[in-house]
Length: 227
Ligand SMILES: CC(=O)N[C@H](C=O)[C@@H](O)[C@H](O)[C@H](O)COP(=O)(O)O
Image 1 (cartoon, rainbow, N blue to C red):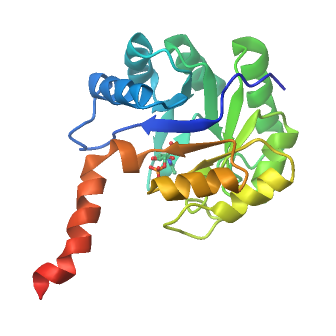
Image 2: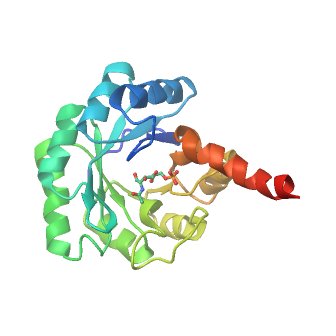
Image 3: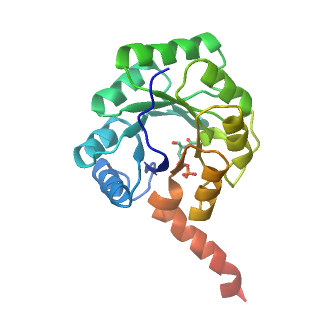
């Protein structure tokens, strides 16, 4: 395991996909600059183009992911060593990858991926997981942190709309370095996750996706408007 040079605090995930009007490397870099000014301790970003643009404008550590679309399924986060390599070359100082049983059913394959990233790229590995069993496996295989990113998105975990505080607390109690990610919608939830043992909290949609945020407001106002 490598030493994790990351202070505790807020990580902002700067991602825009599909037909999101904010999609584009320069817009993501502007988002990252805003997050840095606001006091974030790291940025999570998807793909070499966005990471390269962000690295030019912020000093913060960049947690790189490489989402690869899968037909009729959720994207696979950093499936291979080559993807990890491209992220580090672009400026990522940490690589996050999918450590779910859905996409990494074989312990051997996951071990090789983590080991090669450590030995050849010399950066820490963050394991995106959806259950305690997946967290335990990734931790045992040498990931520097486990992230609750995938809770609610895999065949092993029930769908959800709120952060998985139970999973975070359980991982923390078991002595893992756990980072809360997924469905964090308010500052109160973020601080609750820290007090339940999260080392850091990653917030994406609620900070960097105005398309989603505006729709939350519109939906909440709907009932009154209809009466
Ligand atoms: C499941 C999956 O692929 N999650 C992705 C991982 O990077 C992103 O789409 C999320 O936005 C990110 O995890 C942050 O979560 P939230 O946007 O809920 O704050």
